Length: 415
Ligand code: ADP
Ligand code: ASP
Ligand code: MG
View 1 (cartoon, rainbow, N blue to C red):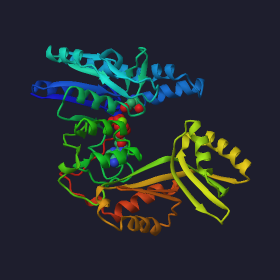
View 2 (cartoon, rainbow, N blue to C red; view 1 turned 90 degrees about the horizontal axis):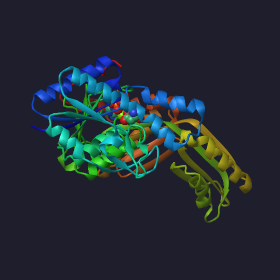
View 3 (tube, rainbow, N blue to C red; view 1 turned 60 degrees about the vertical axis):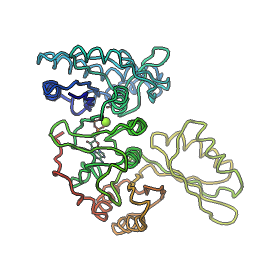
View 4 (cartoon, rainbow, N blue to C red; view 1 turned 90 degrees about the vertical axis):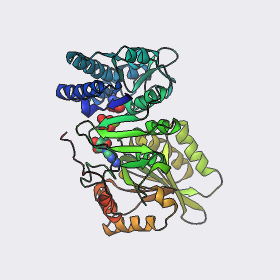
């Protein structure tokens, strides 16, 4: 008998038929003698719908009220799943995050989990119940509901699995695991049987939304493997684990991408000490995070200073930058139709030639690289958004990522 912590995502719970299907899977695990704790997302599209309702009223909602609103999606799916299980004669109880005791800090809309109470969960399990918990939400010191950022149910599941000392955290989703890139963009992408925490962390932070970045961070910290697998097949999926447990050594593991980028360039910035700090200081004072930065000298008196950021922050940032550039006598150029493409792999640490091969693949497609950053295990480039899918395909083929052996070829669920 094992203690299973399973998380089901929005598409796995998107209709009543799917909720019944998930209830059937849980019942089977229960009949095999396992104890089951389930974390749920809201039904597919529900969180977006709630956010849209709010946006129709204001673009600047009170964060406390926003969190109370968007946390309701998970409350619907958790109770429907419990009702579906009860209808199959399987005892189940559902709880909101605050009810069960998912304690967080007070950073509304992006809260971090501080502690998870296990008493109610353990008591219910001992009495033979399946325990269903709303993901994505917790409670702060004041007793206010908080939410954990988009995709946050993954992090709830990991925090609960860690608190219960489960052997692994199972994330059930609409694809069969973690692929070399988003299988919706490259249908012949390979399913990775295993991936290291470090690579998964990069993939998630660079746009692969299959796992929330914080869930990977938390799992790594607690020494807890994550298994990503499909709700709709019996494939063992992908194990996210420590590097020394990876059986298959690869040069690169995957390509992540993000369409949500924007680029701002200030041309003719006077060449004097401290000016870069001044520009970025103004931006960070407005709580805006920037991503890549590049600076090159145009002549001995001035520089071009360029940076990228999330597209949602673009209008606010442009205003700040334009005002400052005017004071400096510099000019500003910007583009919101850019995307970031990143190649990730721990093999890059010990092999050279990865960057040149990647750039040649993009160049071969006539794709112009506007900016580059690298770290020990990743290379990111900014390119035109319209070239993104072509770029992903070209780099995927150049590194033969469609040829990674796996036990079975994947199938995409009909969404
Ligand atoms: P859930 O609702 O189950 O949380 P998400 O939509 O958050 O599901 O995450 C699953 C989706 O992540 C997949 O449908 C797929 O399109 C996308 N995805 C992006 N990159 C990858 C990748 N490298 N491997 C697998 N899925 C990926
Ligand atoms: N329902 C939330 C979202 O759509 C949380 C999640 O799905 O993990 O972001
Ligand atoms: Mg998700």
